[in-house]
Length: 348
Ligand code: NAP
Ligand code: G4F
Image (cartoon, rainbow, N blue to C red; front, side, top):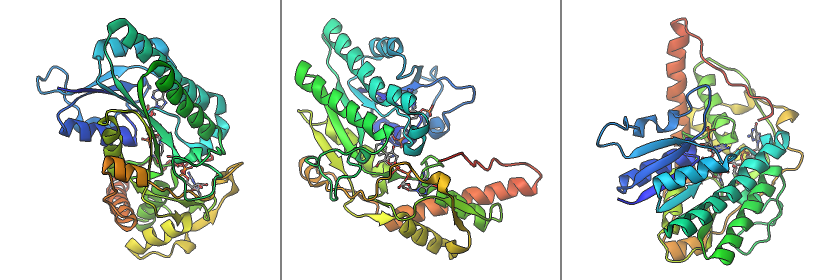
């Protein structure tokens, strides 16, 4: 049974990737950050008690800021494949927590590479590494962006991802390690964190429809993104590690829409006029913005045989329908006298 180790298993991509790998017959191990509240909501449906002989998903306390935990988990798990998805992944927050973002995203990747290098030398075993790179690394570069486009990062998050990208390339060249950089454009789903713009919009629309909220505060509506479905993108990650040689691959749909387009499409699903509810709040603007991301993923399509299955329209509908149902359940709770968390998060 092949073994995979995932950092960031409790995130959006971690949950889709875990489900995908379990389905393929893998034993899946994940790094769990200690928190005072449980943070496993997205993978609870996949988890079985480790005493159950059928259990194939295992969690280990560890953190990308703690190199010794990485080394210990590697020796214990002996993975065939490692997916480095762990990150402080919010671009706006990275301006507020720049040092921490660099520590997790850039130095965290370096810690993982060093642990794997030591592990391989001392045990003689080999493992393949997937690095979760981002289209944010292209930043201000003109679209369409592909593997040959020069990086022009526009946030502490993006700079940190560029550093991680180059650490990975360097370890590939210096030590012959199998490290592949995926450069993924934005991908979304009903599991998306609620402070990213797509989910922030679909959550708010659901609540507006249910009478739980009236106003949605947003920032720049003109930014354009190449939005795909997370379920499709984790398949590309796996495909990259099935190749014989490590490389760099852009993963994208090849279509871009503005935040305004997303609002139009999403509110169209429930027949709502968003202009009556959306207000612009400058706190959601970024000190430096990325205006236009549009990916050219021809290399991945040709070399991996990957292509996206879910269209923009289908993605938006999937997210809106999910969040309308969630808000309906919240409405029931509120009517029964319970309170529900309306997560207004500063600057995100
Ligand atoms: P996400 O939902 O924000 O999940 C991030 C994951 O990283 C969570 O499991 C989080 O744990 C974990 N994490 C945070 N700090 C950590 C630390 N110090 N040590 C170990 N783990 C830590 O992100 P995502 O959307 O799934 O994205 C997955 C990866 O792809 C990230 O590296 C992201 O930067 C990158 N990426 C995402 C996109 C996209 O559009 N989604 C596009 C390109 C690249 P908690 O649950 O405990 O917070
Ligand atoms: O949804 P976002 O926060 O995603 P962003 O900044 O593109 O980053 C995401 O995708 C990257 C891949 O390119 C990942 F690497 C990264 O980890 C993350 O997953 O913002 C999208 C756009 C931005 O231009 C932002 O300024 O939406 C604009 N926006 C407008 N109003 C807003 C808001 N973004 C957020 N989060 N909140 C708003 O109220």
